Amino acid sequence: MTRDDVPQAAELPEGQLADWRKLVDGVLKGAPFEKLVGKTYDGLKIEPLYQRAKDTAPVVGRPPAAPWQIMQRIDHPDVALANAQALTDLENGATGLALVFAAGSGAHGFGLEPSADAVAKVLKDVHVDAGIAIELQVGPQSRMAAIHVAEYVKTMGIDPAACNIRFGLDPLAAGAVWGHSPYTWDEIKVAVTSGIKGLAGLGFKGPFASADGRVIHDAGGSEVQELAFVLACGVANLRAIEEAGVPLEQAQAMVYARLSADADQFLTMAKFRALRLLWARIEQACGLTPKPLFIAADTAWRMLTQRDPYVNMLRATMATFAAGLAGANAITVLPHTLALGLPDRFARRVARNTQLLLLEESNLAKVSDPAAGAGGIEALTSELCDAAWALFQETEKAGGAFAALQQGLIQGKVAATRKAREANIARRRDVLTGVSEFPNLHEADVKVLEAKPITLAPYGAEKFRFASLSPIRLAVSFEQLRDKSDTKLMADGNRPKVFLANLGTPVDFMARATFAKSFFEAGGIPAVDSEGFVDPAKLADAFKASGAELACLCSSDKVYAGQAQAAAKALQTASARAVYLAGRPTDAEAALRAAGVAGFVFASGDALATLDDAYRRMDVT
Image (cartoon, rainbow, N blue to C red; front, side, top):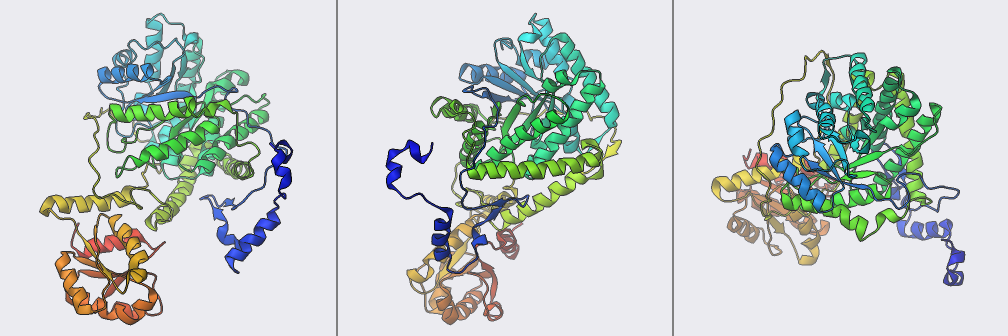
């Protein structure tokens, strides 16, 4: 839509970027404009404003107006209960099942037994030839599950060509997570391609081999690293299948991709769009006519929290929204309680209904690539393409995905990004709502199912060892502090507390007292509020009456100049284990520390280090 399509727009002057910049410069008052420019973990710039991108075309993904597949995880170790869950899910809106087998890359502690008997029981009464999508998530110890599924279809007299099964064979992702392999890549690809040819020979359509970017995302990697890994694994699969005697035109349909979708809407949309463009470039380089790559999405594991897990519903909704708009062919929403254990019926229903509402009420699938022409997303898509292609070429020069893993090339880049990400989590620059910000110390326990995970035999000798890309959750460091608080509560009936030593009037202390309360409660240390004080003796008496072990001075810089040192000394005399000050260190830092101030609490300060110090001073381990 343009101005010409809206008659009323003719009455208004057309906005210009230069006009906007003049207004912004007035607000910045001499500060550099670059303060408004953000950066991704790949160093890509995110401008505060973009103009409409011209001469762009929609990125071809799902067929027009076609909904994505609503996938539901089936990972309960008890196959009878897993089957009941599968039937309930299909009866209530799911259009596909993600069969997660034990020790698979996305199992997260649970999963199905990879035996023929377990497969048959899980799929009992599931009409796999009625348009239901089945996706297998397997690992090295559960790779035979693909064969068992094929055998089950044959035993039931079902036409394999009528089935919609993605077999999920992906030894590269599995090796990256495990950090070792008993076989060379040449040995691995022979085994995998023989399995693919066997499945195709039975009449299954596939796709059979996956390129799983979740491995990178789960380990804390960046969008560029995830895309480059998917490209490297996808190309490795294509090469292996072609070397096994399958024409590239047929191999093209045998490979699909998996990506993680997180709560960063614009980056997630740009990432999915970029993968389609990058894969089309690879197809063209292979002399193939590009066809839309099948992309399966999982909402991100690393963004799940154990604390205030209901916020996970919001994160999953944003992730699903972004992946759906960006053309994902299938989406699996991780239930909001998965980080705590096996999700119950309610959590599974919410995960399923998140997609149903977006499809049936918001009609997200009715518009193909709504981001086309949006300046910001088009720019991010283009920048991701360029950076990911460069990293993919670097991986290829190293000898391909397996060789790059052996050399530590991939792991080293992911580790550097993870370190930067964890530093921003510690400083609360990257916000984890319900954990590092807006914590709820009175949250009720959340129910999960009781289940005993399946233990599988070790997978071969560790002939080739390399650094593993182990999955992480970003909230763990703050959750560990909350665990310390819970342990103390269970031990003596009280949590550790901090006394907000407010100085002056509410106008002086309110803003910093509010900040300090959230800061300490993010570590499981509830705050005891107080009136504003001027007299150090009365302040000390109020601290003693509060029952707190810690104190935090809260006020304005002006009040601090006249009262902070005396207040700190009084609190220290009153046996405070540690006295903190809400605010950045100033020229008076040395004098304040000499008066007893142990540390400073301020935005972008290292919250984890300060909170760890607080627990250490209280002798809480």
